[in-house]
Length: 232
Image (cartoon, rainbow, N blue to C red):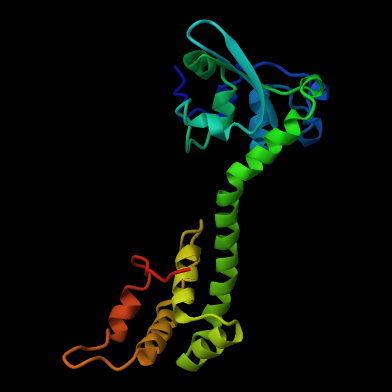
């Protein structure tokens, strides 16, 4: 028996065959693909496709909606964070289990629901903007950190970099943390972090009586740990 949680598309070709020329998103679908599971497995972004989702209540009534992407449904179908979620959602076993019907929207579906797709696409963009923004910030962080690495061979290099780009050491720390969460991660070298730590140490005000500055080694070793309140 196929384990749906780890199944591959070729194990799940039990979804409906589709006439690609009838689909609203015909231009996004690779040539020669006709099975619905293959469609969502091979398109560049299945979340950008249009779907018709039919849900059934306990009293037997059904409701049919046009949606762009299926992400908002995945939590209800126990598919949230599943990398195979899109082609699993087109699998009949999953649909029967959760009492839904999911199919790719046809041109006729969109025509019959004049204006609905535009709204559905706007809702999808609104729902996904935060995740998209995080991805963009992480990608930007990688560019910044790679450039910082080249310059942070001395404390003078650290100071010149933050001055040139109107940054501060706290922001460098925050940006580096975001870059470290990419796959693959973009990490600063120990030497670059040491130069950063030395600048932080030198720029902190003289401690009060009985207190001491945080040592450079401790600042360096804690660079990727936790988050400061003033992190951006």
